[in-house]
Length: 362
Image (cartoon, rainbow, N blue to C red; front, side, top):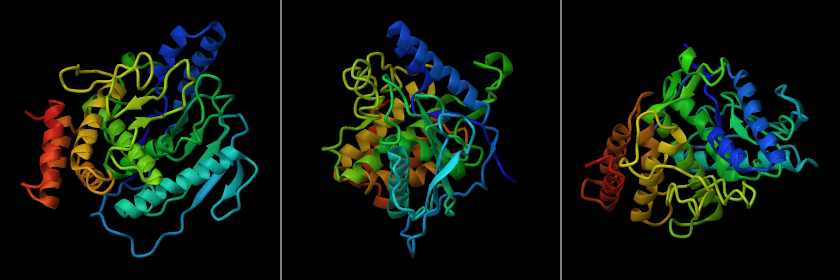
């Protein structure tokens, strides 16, 4: 039986856009509110049926490199999908820079999943990955719809979505999680009285929803580091760096120091430990807790984040249920680390210490 995936996961959270709008000049405020309203309308497109959920297999190198199936479309400033076909797999670069960036960065993300985790495309079975660029009129966001990627062109406040490798990897990882965990990690139906708008049927909520966002942040960070050849000490651990206009900030989130406004943007209120956590918190705020746990584990292990810490997280998250808690994630990652490296290993101790530092484990 096919699962239904109806949860909108945007690259730039609506909460961030609202706060930018609060401090923006009148013209920019109007534009930013327009982005939020457009995002609300896009959610009505998301009655999307996912392919059969596939559990992640043990990490191993694929016997042969698969031939990817990427397709890039041009929405032409409209909201009709998929749009006009502009580039397909093995086609030469086109004149449209955004189309080429979406094609290339999708390929880098798929390369990472294949080479590091032995995963064949988003669903594990070489599904076609479609992307629509120039979506909406100067739309200031990007997202995985449940079936494909869409990219707006942005404006003077926020943009550069097709150029942001970590953001593309983050959004495509929502697709991976969708196929990896039956029911979707943290996807819940929203009661009518609690909806921001009537079409909002589902959302990411609770600790499981925060874990969904965190796993995308973790993979987005690793893909960026992997492509740049950066070890844990060299990496900035910033997500969405350079996407915001300078007056708004430097990045969307930090895994090294969640909530540090000097590293991200002026009202970043991400949580860094369970001491700050409140039930019902926005999933982007609470995702800072597992994000920081991954950073601490990777930093303690040393070397490249994708060599040991990354495979531990990938294997462990594939074992989680759709309603998993932070404690479930801590126990799963610790168990995988122990099985892979031994209970007396540096890797196991690093994972345990990381979850203890963020106060998920005692």
